[in-house]
Amino acid sequence: VDSLARLEEPPPLSAAGLAPLWRPAALLAVAYAVLLSSVVGYSLRAWANRHTDASVLVLYNAVQPPLTALLSLAVDPVGSRWGLSEAAGTALVMAAVLVCARGDGLVGRLAGGSRGRERDRRVRRDEA
Image (cartoon, rainbow, N blue to C red; front, side, top):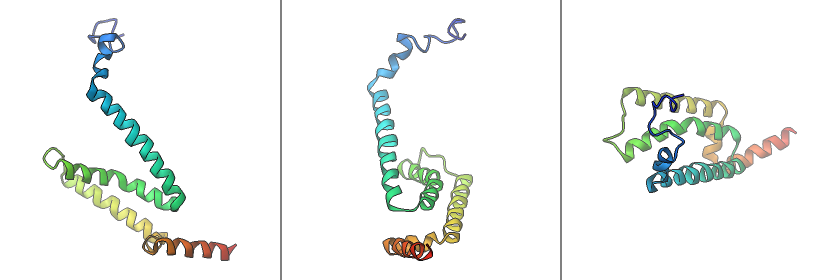
């Protein structure tokens, strides 16, 4: 409707509307999104699924947004927006993750490393 009413010039699906997508910067952004966000991200998640418990991975998922905000602040401290609400949100998420980890005994397993996982396997085997 917008194209017919000439509210969008050029129309988004016309050759002129698609031309900016073929610029090198746009193609690099798409390549980055596909390779790093998808391929590398899913590969790392698959590797982590083989080497740790699902409950630990869920906790890492909760920590990703605050860590991304902190990384953004570290990379571009002038351009990043970081205030009291962001700091409070990050602190709340980190506190919640610690509470969950302690409640499930994950902190001990993480601290014990592979010995902690081996101990968990023995306990499960003994319970069966």
